[in-house]
Length: 251
Image (cartoon, rainbow, N blue to C red; front, side, top):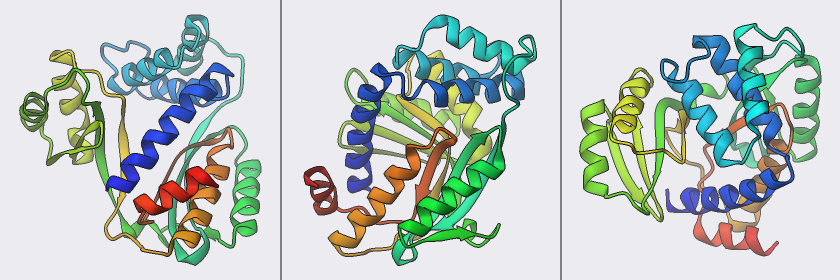
């Protein structure tokens, strides 16, 4: 997982830079809308909303924009598009499996954009179930090691229902069953520990190893997909090595 973690670190830094240009505000707002629609507009009672707001604040998203997104989700603000969450399955080149989480108000546009990028990169869209069997759904939390003691986080996460806690690079990663997401989040919140990233993730049951050149090609295709406003998260079964990460940085 070290390659994945290192690449994730690079993407977080890139995301922070993009946030200054407002590029990720649309994505953050959609997450807030969906979270508020799902379980109400009170972040103290809605764990997913609270975490989405924390992400938005970390990206310096204006408070007015956050409040407006919450109201759109609860129905107080009737303006704007009606978003829906959709999970797409597909393949990148070399048969790398992809799970693509989207939030969109126009699924026809979203599918067309995904199909175009995947086709151009040597992959394609898959039918429901064609890819998902290769992944496990897991609750996931990433805690910065800076200012957080691993043993303390380990105990809190375990009491919250976590199945596994690991430390990779500058992150403490917590994994658990999807239904343990709230209990783990509540336990961390009670201890005043703020995750840098969290959510329900798709983790590959087995990773696919490719040579550096092919790995970088897939990584670039994933980055292109992530540029789409409708795309929230992408999960793959690609084995990302340190060599591939270095080659990606130098490309």
